Length: 388
Image 1 (cartoon, rainbow, N blue to C red):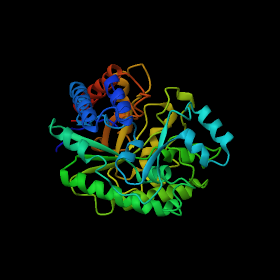
Image 2 (image 1 turned 120 degrees about the vertical axis):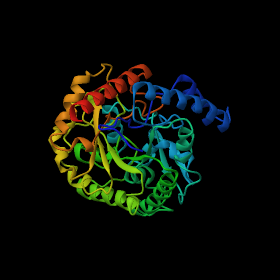
Image 3 (image 1 turned 60 degrees about the vertical axis):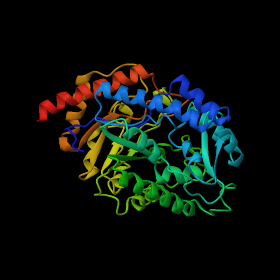
Image 4 (image 1 turned 60 degrees about the horizontal axis):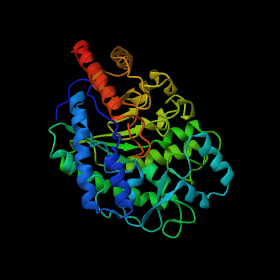
């Protein structure tokens, strides 16, 4: 599908309505059937699609309306994976007081987030996102983006010492099955003609910007990362490239999304620092695009994107966590600055992250989210006029 210059897209998630939240809760408690929940979610997806259409977005998503968050939804899709709250994960942490201190500083109550953990050999019970794509495809002619948890995120999240060890003695052994599962899903999505598959790897910034207790993470309850950031980044890069082997050039654009945390509207508790320490690794990832957060000063200077070496940039241009609606000209100026380092054909426009990453803790309202997408589309129109 041919795209215009400066294509606009989303990172994935959209705020859930009260009906969806109740549906998620009732399905989890077996008060309604999965079929009943899917009817609720179907309508929510159509409403999300309409919002993107009205805003003028070129590459749309289903808003992840069927997911409780960007990673834990896989527990319903995979064999031998169960959900644990962060509070339950504390049972597996040696230094409980330190871990609780980190969660407190990061505005993440231990009871409010849940984590998928492997307790046996994992395999796909059913497609991870293929069914979501198939429903959306029936209702739009626009290009579609599908977001999947990245292999490093899944591996760090699901390997919990004391729980996973019987099936997977090390997290590296679990990673082999994670890669296999993601390759199976990617093959299915490519076969179906998905325009864009985005892998989410939000923990990569934590490796370089979190100094204290570097083997702990706020995002996915992973308790196993090595303190050596370089070793972890090499591991993450290798996993991504294993997933992508022989996958490019088959009609589906692929990308990796790296943000600085999207769990709080309080900017001062989110990670801060330039992308430059990550660029040697990101430039080695065998994907078409890097989706990076640049709507906030916390991201550092745009000059770091020079290291992308021919890859596309998904330019984070609006902040999903703020109430203020960005000025169109500010977005135009940011894209023009990016065009000093990459060609206009390499630049896509998107929010920094999702608008509804956690179902129960959306980053913004539906109305403000739609308004932010609207200014994104307006900026793209001005940029097309300027560079055409």
